[in-house]
Length: 122
Picture 1 (cartoon, rainbow, N blue to C red):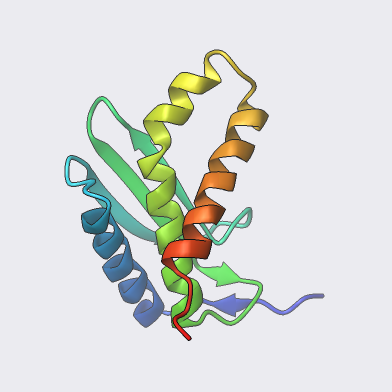
Picture 2 (picture 1 turned 135 degrees about the vertical axis):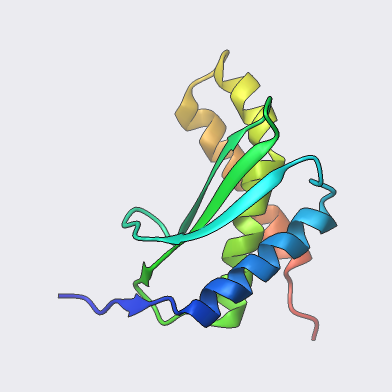
């Protein structure tokens, strides 16, 4: 059995703060984002959006495989806001290409952003 670590209320509030930071950073002010803390097994966090309505939900999972750190929480918040940033593009592209292909390309872009914008200064 593997260890699981609970994301605390403090972790959640930091996650929410970072989501709001990255929302502003990327100019996604046309979205009303609800940030929630819920039980979820498939990933550390998730994003769901309705582009037409301008609403989105970004969630952080209550349990992680590793003990959450501020650095990891920031990266997860960044990642989910990037999902929202690319949401409309991905939805349109999926109508002409496979969901798996578009998801892979979207995550390739997000990883590049993580590796540049979140790069630690030496």
